[in-house]
Image (tube, rainbow, N blue to C red; front, top):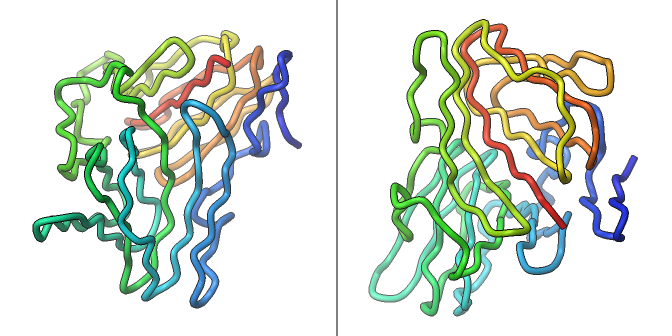
Length: 227
């Protein structure tokens, strides 16, 4: 099913079931494939790059937040700039300078457009590789979260749940995609429980009743769109 919010914006992604961006967007030999699940100011695009493919370096006036789901990706630019990312790695690309993507072995990743005027956490250094899961620690009996980037239409948050903690049932002000990054938890959605593990994803519609329970220690990123 495809979610559609009241004013016509929608995320082109299945709702109410655990899925895997990597499994759903497999590489095709010799090809680069892109799938936009949201277009506009903060576009969200899945990319599948087959072994030996390249998206040539171009200059963009905005950052790209890259989340690698599978494989190995090189982000490259001028002056011998090269950064290598593997599954679980992220980078925020530089603006106003050529940035390209290439892979020798193949890569599947999500790209989220971050505008210059969007608020980005100071712990993120554009052009440097980081792991979302390592941005915050677990704390005994607590839920820790960090706002990675946001504007008035989008929020990207990282959360760490100690075992046994959780968020009680509530509805979202917009659509959201969960990226499970470490451990496992249970997503309650519209009365049904769904076990989710690192490397898996979940999408809920605007207004969808949901909860999060950490059956083990659990880290996730949450991309909330407020169109």
